[in-house]
Image (cartoon, rainbow, N blue to C red; front, side, top):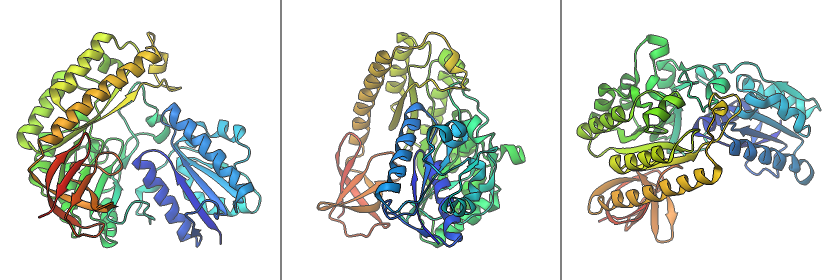
Length: 438
């Protein structure tokens, strides 16, 4: 048996992939090694969504290969989205790596480890298949009190700028009982926060049963003993129904936190992007959410510099952000990706203009975020403690997703990581809060 290290890049869905790979590694009897210098096999789980992610992945693979000279490494195995997208090209450009496994072949990881340690080279891409649909063991890489729970994979939205459908395939919901079984297993080992992930969690159930079944799933997950918070990530705006809003507003375990990637608000740009909905539909949606659940934290992601975006349309986006006043916003400069419809569009926006728009939007959102946080001063919030910094405990409120949003620094509390405390907000910062326990 060998010591196996894994480096995972990209989004939380990739994190789940990596944890399932480690589960297969552990099941095969190998030892999981966290120090890359001591690992005999290094697995690099790549992201291939945008150009910067591809560059990061290649750099990481080259770093792993260096451990063949500077460490104990005998084999480097590359997995993930970038392999699924550009596996053959990667194999030619990186002959120092020993194996390339596409998304539909990662179940062969144990066999691949054995073959490469015997000196073989492996290339398996294939079609992205639903091996993860089954109930599989996972080795959590997150803190033990929080975990991502994948309820579906793939995407049917076919946005003009996005390569996910070509990498991950069409949308496929995991069977409800499989999801519930995995949630029970996570709760049994001490997980208190479930972060539901998929390319579009609001589509859950539509492919299998012809209905949007996320509200029903939330009700069943909330009934599980040990689960304290359930967070929704990646909700498509036109599938946030009144039933789903009620489920969020009325169920105490469901975080009042709704992540709704919009990308833009201009009707013309939305059509060019292949996105559903309109600016007015989005405004109506957020009005309904705030009417039913006024304390909900709204998060979105926006794109600047999409081909043809005019200065007027960018100003329209700035005004929209000012009007909605999102609690959290992530901004992405447009990146032309090979194989997408958007890459063929004329009227490319100059990089300097994209960068300027990015900075302006981020600066404006920073001001909104500070103003939003100031309104929380004097209120009491529940905080999940995750560590210590100086004289304060550090954690997150239900308004803060792990590794994405701000932190809460808590004074005067005595708690262990993974425990919850009630604290009064005494100071607001741009993204973080300072709170104090009685």
